Picture 1 (cartoon, protein in one colour):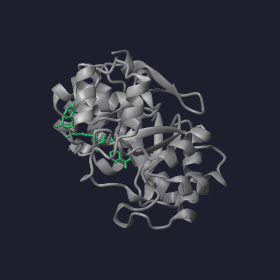
Picture 2 (cartoon, helix red, strand yellow):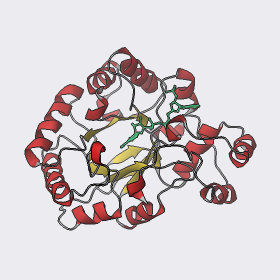
Picture 3 (cartoon, helix red, strand yellow):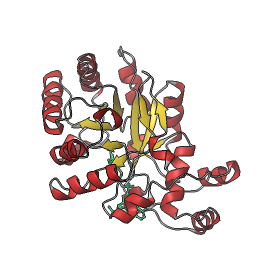
Picture 4 (cartoon, rainbow, N blue to C red):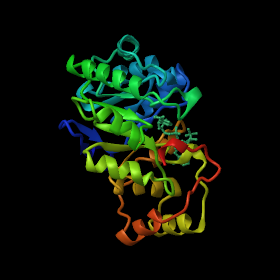
Length: 282
Ligand SMILES: NC(=O)c1ccc[n+]([C@@H]2O[C@H](COP(=O)([O-])OP(=O)(O)OC[C@H]3O[C@@H](n4cnc5c(N)ncnc54)[C@H](OP(=O)(O)O)[C@@H]3O)[C@@H](O)[C@H]2O)c1
């Protein structure tokens, strides 16, 4: 279970547990509360939510009720993608801060460089303004690190031109066969940790003979192989699960994929070809 408490170090020295627990599409109320509480009881110490998921109140309550010291849990939330002006950012953050009600956030990230209804539209100016406001929030001490999500190389270069603080994180779509090499290379060169969202392709990952063969070789399931693959690429997976069996399975990642097998996995074509792809990240 060490994998749940092992950490990556962010560019400001903050430690972040190597596996996060995703909460997208987990409805507010009992379902979000129970999933997060189960995950925490099972040893997860890193929870990923967003204002857009509408479940921050239940996520926060589960964290407060868990009995685990606040300092031992890493919590991320996200600025809604459409908000690109300073006042809007500060207001959305305050709402998130109050809804979570956990004293501080470990990480706050811009959900996307464009509104979800207009993927790929240009908001360079707005993203610079939003990033300045994120820096302002960081300086209050209410968040321990700030970052971005769904930013491609252009989006990162755009904010870095004017940034006082380099984003600590870029959270992007990333799974076996869809590993965004341009973004991950740029992030590595600039000290930005990559997080893998949808590391199981939101359940759309297809079994194929190579995945099956390698999963069998290590006596694990394909999802476990897929999560371990992400970690060994120095990327941080954020699996989401509501079923307790999945929550338990996804923490059993203390095995090592050989360098040769990592090479094979890194060369695989998209393992979820029918899945929604964020085309702006190529
Ligand atoms: N920044 C962004 O724009 C963005 C976008 C998408 C996602 N995210 C983050 O990334 C997280 C994960 O991505 P995701 O929600 O797209 O999904 P995912 O983690 O790729 O896949 C979740 C699906 O896989 C199933 N599953 C989980 N573990 C399994 C296992 N061991 N065996 C078989 N099936 C398993 C889940 O089932 P059950 O739920 O039924 O257990 C669910 O249907 C999100 O929850 C969110 O926090 C961020």
